Amino acid sequence: ARSLFFARLGFDLLALLMMTIPVFAALAGVQQPFATYWYSLLLASHVAAYLWVGRRGDRLVVFLSLCFDLLALVYLATLTGGLRSPIMQGQLVYTVLFALIYPTPLAILPPLLILPVVTKIEQLLGTQMAVRDLLLLLWYFVVNVILVYVVVYLDRREEESFRELDQLQRRRRQGALTEERSRIAREMHDGLGAILSSLVIQTEYLLTQADPADGESTPASGDAPPALVKELRELHRTGQEGIEELRRAVSMMRDD
Image 1 (cartoon, helix red, strand yellow):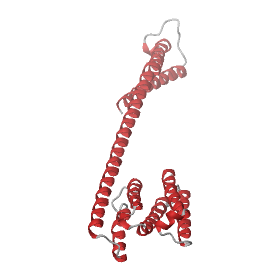
Image 2 (tube, one colour):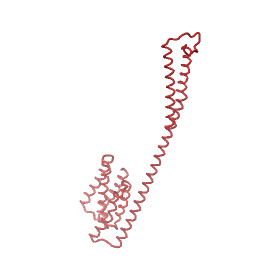
Image 3 (cartoon, helix red, strand yellow):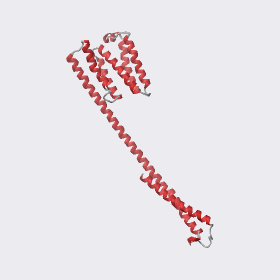
């Protein structure tokens, strides 16, 4: 939006020179105060379109303001020689602007329609030079096609590069995520798994010492309270379940 605004200021400066410098005003056939009103509306549309960027419908507002610029271009080109006017070079600039901001076939039609419109106005005014204007019309048409092709080609290349970069970033994030999952799974297996395994082994040892039913209790151990034996068995079972759950979690983190 900023680049478009400054580019338009260049056209506004050119129009201001044509209005204020008598030589340029005479060559362009500028009529006061009509030209001042037209210039004020043009400048106001540029400022309004710039200030509207970022709000709802900003693309439509910019599009309409660009179309208003095209009307001003047609008016100045008609006054200064039609297709033979040096101001018609601005039509190529607006073709590039439309192609960059609105890269669709229908959106590029407004700047292309300037050519037949100016030709028709010349025909109505009786200033048309048939052969020369036909060659100029063909020349502008070919240059417009080339510009549109180049802009669309570069736009597609940029989109392809963006998609490739996005895919590479996704792969990089996925690789980093996989590596992080593997690291966490390894730490869980080596750390928490070892702790749970040690807990189960120690609980089995305590059961052999405390439960005479196991047939491995030592003579000095005596009979442990049934509640303690029950809690040790529950702790042993819980530890085994924890190991199995840990194995499932580690497997899922490595495979998913």
